[in-house]
Amino acid sequence: MSEKTTVIDEARQTGRYGLPLDVKFCAKCVMSNQRPSTVVEWKHANTDKKPTNLFDEEGICDACQYAEVKEKIDWNEREREFRDLLDRHRKKDGSYDCIVPSSGGKDSGYVGHLLKHKYNMNPLTVTWAPHWYTDVGWKNLQGFIHSGFDNILFTPNGKVHRTLTRLAFENLCHPFQPFIIGQKSIAPKTALAHNIPLIFYGENPAEYGGNAIESNKNSKMDPKFFSSVESDINKVFLGGMNADELIQKEGISRNELSPYIMPSQEDIERKNIEVHFCGYFFKWDPQENYYYAVENCGFQGNTERTEGSYSKYSSIDDRIDYFHYYTTLVKFGIGRATHDASQEIRNHKITREEGVSLVRRYDAEFPKKYFKDFIEYIGITEERFWEIIDQFRTPHLWEKSNGDWKLKYQVS
Image (tube, rainbow, N blue to C red; front, side, top):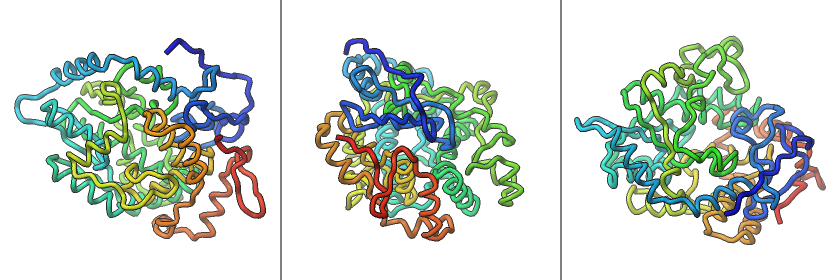
C-alpha cells in the first residue's frame, strides 16, 4: 500500500454528537463517516469532538486503510514478539499467568484456547455478566468453561444495573453504557486482586475505525482507557449522571457504585499491569475465529439470523445487545448490518456490492424478538421507548415520510 494522506476537513460543519453534516460512505466498505470516536460512542452526549473514522483522498475509511496495512505485516515476526511476551510472564508454579476477559463468545474463545493449548499459558478467564442472557449465550459460556477453562463470572447487583441501564437509555440513548464500563473494569480489577499482571483482549476496537493505523502500531492498550478519571467516584459518569445525582435522586449508595469504578492508574502502574490486544500479533478475522471456537470451545451460533443483520454468530449472548445496535442506528445512521458487512468486506468474505445489498435490506430492521424483554428489564412502556428513541434521532440523518422515519442517506 502506498502512503496516503488522511483527509481531515477542520472547517467542516458538524451536527449532533459532533457528526459531520456532509455524509459520506467508504469507497471500499459500507461504513459512513458518521461512525463516532470511542469517546463519543461511550459517552453518547452532545460534544464538539469530531468522529475519528477518517477518510483519505480516495474516499477510503481508516479501517479499510488498516486492512491494507495488515496484508503487508510480517505475521511470523509478530508471533515471535508474542512468544517473547509470554515467556516473560509465564509462571512455573502452576498459578495463573494471564487473564482473558471472556463472554464465552467466538473471539474470546479463540484467544483463550490459543493461549492455553498452543502457547502453554495458564489463563484465568473473567466474565462481566450480560444484562439478560440469551439461551444460546448461556450455553456458549458453559460450553467454553467445560471445554477446559477456569472462569470467574461477576454479576452486578441486578436492581442497580437495571436502574443504570434505564438511565443510560433515557439520558444518553445508550443502554449498553453501564455494561461497557463494567466490562472494561472487570479484567484489571481481577488482575490487581489476584496479582496477575498480564491481560489479553481480542482485537483493538480501533481496527474498525478510529485512528486505526496509528492505534495498531503496538499491542498495548493505553492504561487511561481502563484507569482514567472514573477511578474517582466523585467523577463517575453513569447513565448521564454523576455520583451525587445517582445517590440523591436514585437512591444508589456509593458502595453499590463500586463495581463500575475503574482501578486507579497508580495501582495499575504499581502492579505493572499490562493489557495487550491479540489482534496485533495475529491477523484478526472474526469469521475464522467462529470456525475455531465451534471446533474447540463448544461454541454455537444462533439457529436464526440476528435481527438487524444477516449473521448468526456475533454478539448473541445478551438480549439487550440488540438495542445497543438499534440505538447506534438512531444516533449515527449505522446499524448492525453495517458493522458486520464492513468487517467482512475488509476480510474478503463478501464483496462491497453484497455488503451494500445486505445493509439496505437489514440495517434498519427493528429487533422485535427481545423488545418486550428490553422494556420489561428497564421498566418503561412501549410509548416511553419510542418517545426516547425519537428524541435522540439525529436531525441531519433522519426525515419523516408518510408518518414513518427514514434515513436520508443510503449506502450505494
